[in-house]
Length: 181
Image 1 (cartoon, rainbow, N blue to C red):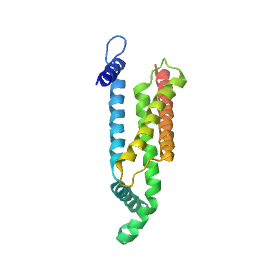
Image 2 (image 1 turned 90 degrees about the horizontal axis):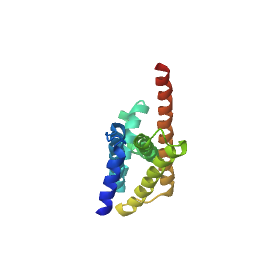
Image 3 (image 1 turned 45 degrees about the vertical axis):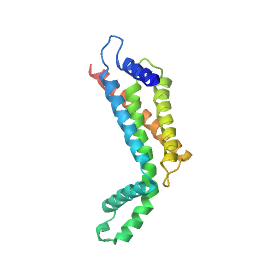
Image 4 (image 1 turned 30 degrees about the vertical axis):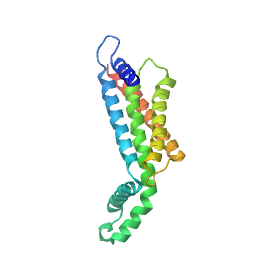
């Protein structure tokens, strides 16, 4: 309980600038990052059958978009098509959800005064540790879920790409707005 209070006090201190005003950007990005982590946790908590069903539904949706007459296929053929896309859909989802987390963590932790290395390292450490904890969490879900080192690496790759995209975005917008004023 004492540790939780310490974490909350640290977060509250972090959200306030030195002049005592709330930093709205940090607050919004922290809330969004925590929500993103919650969504990731929710998907990781699904048993293997429910997770497979979710990815197969997305596979069928892709089929309706990509294949000309997918709606005329038999349900069995549609299911086989979705099963073929299962692995790429899962891996893409892993990458994208952690890329989003990397963007949100960068928004929450970015400070102009930090070195370039710190701007990348801080959100990466948090995102990569969350990826590891997420995979370990799946060990306790059971029902066909497993802890995969390759998923940890893929998730961490998504985090770093998100961080780099966020920093690139910041640099581009700074250049644009510095030329306007």
